[in-house]
Length: 346
Image (cartoon, rainbow, N blue to C red; front, top):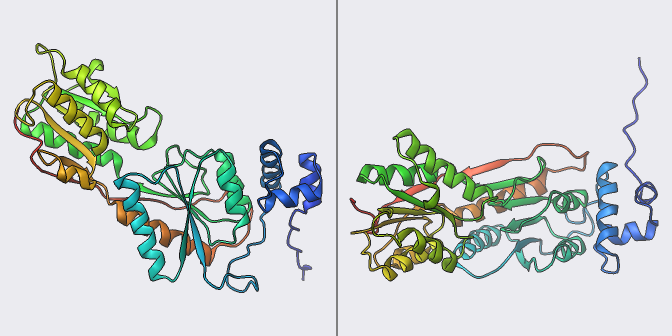
């Protein structure tokens, strides 16, 4: 009978310190969110810990004598303004309250400060919303054994980071098919930011559906509004400026930018939808309040927040420390077209 094989030993703080070229006390400070360590040293220590397969002992799961009397989760956002983020927070809070969990909201005001705050708090994990995180930042959290779920990731997260979003590509397709069914063939697009996943997917689904029907979007009618109403107003105004050659419909990759297209249409004295049809994306409250009410692609914003909380709780209940490189859940919730009065036949 073969002798039992001893499990591999977990990396020590001394090994991490040697690899990072620093001291054991500094490594301990970094792993616990100390504020008197430079960003460069923090990143070097976390990178070394990740390369060695280190996982900080969790301070919050069942069986730990330091478990919080009232468990909490962190929600990290770029900003708190706007109907979209309000919907996400509503979903997270409702699901958390039903499970007896408190929510701590952090605004990511600087590159690494929000991560250090998370490292110092013994929470069940973090939900990250619309924060342009780097792979290194997310790896810092997993090295610290903090479960993470990213809502609507701006760039593709590492394989071991869970994420949730909407079927953006399919939503773009739905918008295109609606305009094609109405008879539109001269169509413009206002995207969000060029490199962001959701904007790229929505545009790709939209132009793919048009291309299948033999319709193309001219380069001059594809512009980017950076998710900003005023910027969308400016680029849409350029599309609508020529009476000899203007689109009969415009698809905006967010409702907020679609409101900027409304502004441009009114400035050009173009009735909606009589002279220009407009489709948005999100179905925030303002889309139904617009004049006329906006046709849009609904993404289940509140449901995304609730689902992110459930994913995080499941990770907290089942996760055990282990080597990096595993795979995590990728979830997409269904989008659907909401037809209102901003679209009509050309």
